[in-house]
Amino acid sequence: MIEAALAAFFMVLEPTHLMFLCLGVFVGLAVGFLPGLGGIVGMALLLPVAFQLDPQTGIAMLIGVAAVITTSDTFPSVLMGIPGSAGSQATIIDGYAMAQKGQAARALSAAFIASMFGGVIGALALTLSLPIARPLVLSFATPELLMMSILGLCMIGVLSGDAPLKGLLVAGLGLLVGTIGAAEVAPAYRYDMGYDYLFDGLPLVVVSLGLFALPEFVDLLARGGAIAKRGAALGGGWLEGARDIVRHWWLVLRHSLMGVGVGMVPGLGSAIVDWMNYGYLVQTAKHRGELGRGDVRGVIAPESANNAKEGGALIPTLLFGVPGSAGMALLLSAFVVFGIQPGPRMLDTNLSLVFVIIWSLALANILGTIACLVFIRPIARLTTIPFSTMFPVIFLLVTVGAFQATRHVGDLIVLAAFGLLGWLMKRHGFPRAPLLIGFILSPLVERNLWITTQRYGLEWLERPGVITIGLLTVILVVVGSRRRKPIVRHEEFPETTETTEAPAEAGKERSHG
View 1 (cartoon, rainbow, N blue to C red):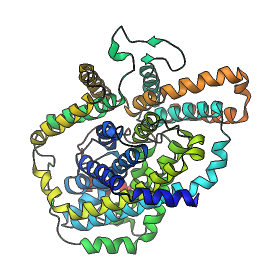
View 2: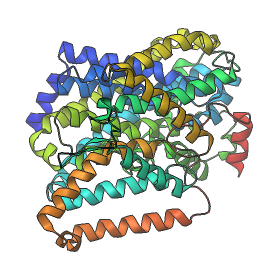
View 3: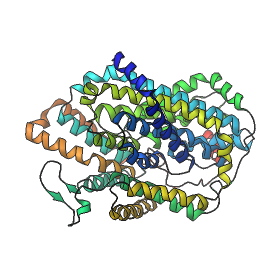
């Protein structure tokens, strides 16, 4: 294992590999700056490029995108008072309050450095999990993998959004959409309606961009004006932010580990990690009355957990083939295109690729933090540009990225159709992440179900692992469906890019409540 880790380290440092990793970091930073888009849009844009590269380089580029989204989304949270993504909502409470006091530089500095350490700790946690989890994962056969996929779908469906039954329904719809085209285990075409374009199924890039990018564009254009409704001066305090990290190092470590734990649970991820960590900070902090009024601890805690959760989300993705989030679902699809099967076989035959991912995750967090600190002032000035001015360029990138899927006019039709579907789902409170994850897992579920029934008949239902995972699934669905209060405040991706109350005042209410 040590030899594989060293070989992967030198592979990551190769010029070509490093160049595409930096490209992923750049795209991740750019997308994270735009409120509401999230990492899935950046990963979807780069999927066509990744598929032209070798597996190690292509996957590392996608890791670069996923790693830094939760770093750059701090810009709109602190400077604008609007969440860059679902995972940066809690940062607004104290981050924007600090900016209003002229301490934006201090808040951003502390947030970026905390994010860097959180990301590195997440990569370290992923590394340490391999020796422990490898024997367990290698003992899994297709029945257990089938049940893990079903468990992951149910968790994502139940935990995404305020209405768990809606989440389960949407996950089932995703499974159905994933069956369009050639069957996995039989020489048949399904739901193709006689169109050649549908023979190979719907392109993942087009579906993901339609579901998540277009609805956010519509909302930003409808709102009008500049990206930021209100601006805040950067002020000074860059070194003070770094000293805050040293002074509160225990917070960085504790909340990074909490972020890893949350990331390991499919369906939680960005939707809950920031509020869970902020709430825990409020309950345990000394002088808690300062929280919500511009306390740097309220920035450090959620930002540490935000980046660390990516390392946690990679654990079920790599070890069990169950995506820890919608972004990890796109990564899972990239594995399939490259002919790599995540799960037990990956740890046995592609261990070097696992370490390439780990090294890329750690390095991307470091590069992203440096870039944010270097380019803070020009990025802050971008907040005054009307979104309508930036929209043509961004929309062109999305359209070209979608058209590159198959270079057929059907790509644009599907993009528009799923854009409309995503907007309707967003308006009516249906979480979109379960649909995408169900769509991606559909071939895997079908294949494992076919192999399981052909090899084991009905005896697979008597296997201890299947029974255990099945009971966990039933408990999750029953408990999640009966809960009165939502576990999370938002779905995996924020439904709005506006705040309905002044962040500082909201923070006061939460911190005292």
